[in-house]
Length: 283
Image (tube, rainbow, N blue to C red):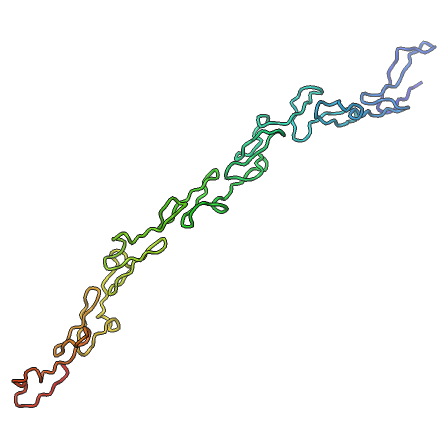
């Protein structure tokens, strides 16, 4: 008669014969299963033997069998029971575990990644490091200096034009100490970080060397105060003069106006008009 074996088992011939001299057969559970009643049920090796895996390896039940795996963060060095031995990885156990801008540091828990100076972040190969903008977040530079971020987290401080110093401390340069900073007909005014040249009265231009020209005050009546009737305007370098016209003489206490000369009174011993009446006219 045919022997019907349960699932996960196979029929095998035994070494025992029956009374009729015929071979006998039996049902044998497959590997990883055991007989329970008339059925073959899977064996949970992980529950039956808690030390089935080596050290810190984790046992996972399979159907059939089981497997040993290292916990997250551990590596398998491939020795011992089931060829699974777990250990905490060190920097030398892994290939480039940290980002290029971070350093790997061994510790009791394995290793950690620390971003180098001038960088911040997790530091791992996956999450990396970002450059810290030192000039924006922290800078020892003077307010009168230019800050420039350099590779690997360093910075340079350079005093701006018009200032001098080491970049951390910058002092205003007094350009007016240079006698050639402005035109000879201008005066220098020092300002914070710069200077300006101002043409002297009677000159016009930018004030820079070679750029102060004489202003002809006589060309525009609005720029001189000479009396039109009694004087003629004479332009001079940086100024002007009011020259008395014929028949006029400089008024007392003034260098810009002239008074009429009374020719009738010039010679009291010999009248200008002799016996005739002398009438003075302007000029």
